Image (cartoon, rainbow, N blue to C red; front, side, top):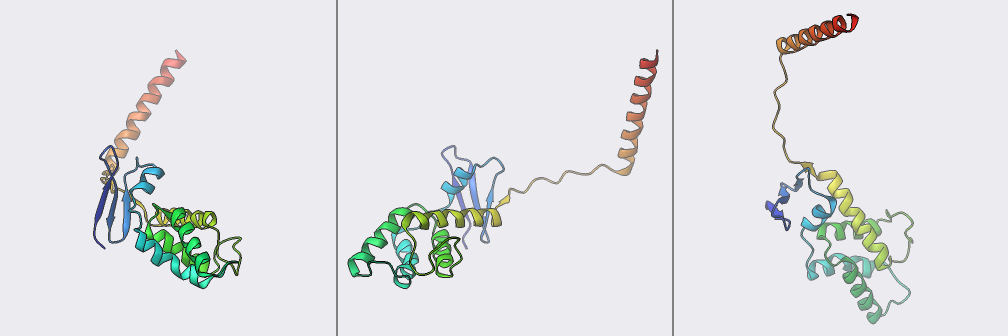
Length: 163
C-alpha cells in the first residue's frame, strides 16, 4: 500500500497510512479522521455494492428496481471510503449485522449505518497515535535523592507546625 498523508483545512497532517495502518495525531477529532480517509469513486461504489444487489433479493427484483436500489445505495454511501463499503457488504452477505433481515437486502439508511460502523471498527482497530519521544526514566540514585528531598521537606513542615 502506498503511504498517504491527508491534511485538514488547518494544514495539519491528520492521516498517515504506512503499511495499511492509519496514524493520527492525538489532537485529531473523529470528524477530522473521518474526513481524512479517501472516499470511494463511483465505480468503486458500484463494484462494492453489486454482489449485495444481485445476491440479496428485494420485493422488486426487476431491472428497473435493481437500478433504483443501486442509485439509493450510491446516494447513501457517497463520500464513504471503499474499505467500509466492502466491509458492510461482506457483513450483510454473511448475516453478521444485528437485526438484519436474513433474506432481503437492507434499506440505504440501514446500509450507511453499517458502513459507518465499519469505519469506526477499522479506526479503533488500526489507528495508532503518533509515536511519542521516549522519556528517560529516572535512575535509582535520582529516585533516592527525590525521596530524601521530600523527607527533609516533610520534617521541616512538621517542625514548623509543632512550633
